[in-house]
Amino acid sequence: MIYRSTRGNAEKVGSAKAIIRGIAEDKGLYVPDFIPELDEPLSELVDLSYHDIALKILPRFLSDFTEEELRDCIEKAYDAKFSATEIVPVVQAGDAWFIELYHGKTSAFKDMALSILPHLLTTALKKEKEDSTIAVLTATSGDTGKAALEGFADVPGTEIFVFFPQDGVSQIQARQMVTQEGENTHVYGINGNFDDAQTAVKRAFNDLELAKRLAGRGYRLSSANSINIGRLVPQIVYYFWAYLQLLKRGGLAPDDPVNIVVPTGNFGNILAAYYASEMGLPVKRLICASNINHVLTDFINTGIYNANRPFCVTSSPSMDILISSNLERLLYHLSGKSETEVSRLMEDLEQNGLYEVSPKIRKGLEKFRAGFADDAETLSTIKKLHDKTGYLIDPHTAVAYKVYQDYRMETGDDTPTLIASTASAYKFAESVTAALELKDASDGFAAIRQLHCATGVAVPVELETLEKKPVRHKSVIDKEEIAAVVDAVLR
Ligand SMILES: *Cc1c(COP(=O)(O)O)cnc(C)c1O
Image (cartoon, rainbow, N blue to C red; front, side, top):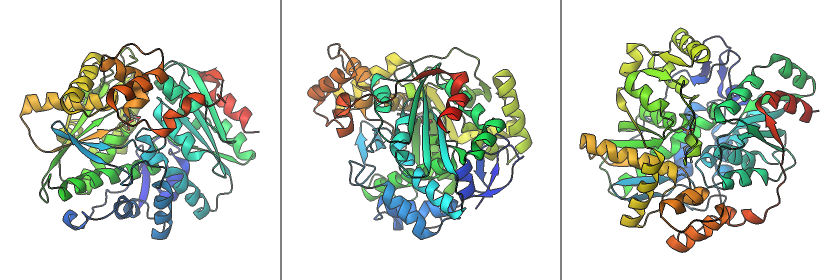
């Protein structure tokens, strides 16, 4: 499998190089030359384990790696770090099936990809006989940062830098990051929002002078954000897995279509669902759910992407994003691989914060539906579902469930539906206790205890022990300082 840049002005590379580099040298994202089909009848795969399904998907995209290497990466990634033996439980509640993607170490779905990325990256380095140390730079809206830190902590040959918006993440999310152990971990709060952090990190990647200085000292920069193809590909697996669980449990007959609803921020998770459907997973609708920062809802409904609007901090902070990086990949595929069109659109976005796509791309969006939920709707959705069924969801998942309710009301579509459940409710305990109208908790940790007493749902071990962990990272910097900080640490 060959990877090329969405913007057409970079060397074509294999999967190992694409993972090492993270982003192409023309600032484009690496995309596979074609989307491979899964050419086996799904009904024959129902008894496979999560590992086995991953071994059906990954080799088709990551063909630089041997099957043995991939098996090794998969086994190291999806092990007892996950509190669920099946790795990803699929749970029926209300009128949908929830794909619980949050049973990894950091209680959010980012663990699905970031548990395996360090293994893919170190394997790729060996294959490419790269002897530089990889410095991974990551901007985070809260969940990626911690998952990347857990994934890369003390991995030989790597340094991991995480930049999070100082006032844009939950107390629990911040505490998870600033208590991170590991000699190679570097964590900074940024004065600004997620888009500021992401833009500044992208700028550091494109700083050729910085790259040259670091290369002189034996370092190469890479990315753990979902722009890295090594994150995207492992995310395809769980959509197949979830479909197969429904098939196995009689929720579906072979070849029946499903709808998939994804609470969306940087467009990585839903892009993986799109890849799954292009690979042959029977998907009727891909429903993109946003919070009040609903740039994507407007885009899917009008073909106009307009980031010129106020940035709102919400109860679903991991979706507080106005510039969704991975959309660039979808534009590339839907434009018929037109590098010129993608380059022009991304130029417009950079210059004016705005672009409008061609009729061809709009037509390609037909399978997508989109909607958004504000904070009040999100919280009341958590309460309604819990009151009715006893099932507890976090605010991100609640955004998705509310958008799905609206979709059903409007269309009457009763196709079986999978909802990507992206975080444990305990990770956003303050919002969830407010949603359930429990009495005001004094802070995030008190909220965790209250929520546990009120619902009886088990608290993830890592969150239970978090309060007593010492803070190790205390720096807060301006976004302009990112390059200088990296330069100074990597001496
Ligand atoms: C990252 C994240 C999202 C958004 O996923 P994208 O791939 O960025 O669209 C949604 N929910 C939670 C809990 C997340 O951590």
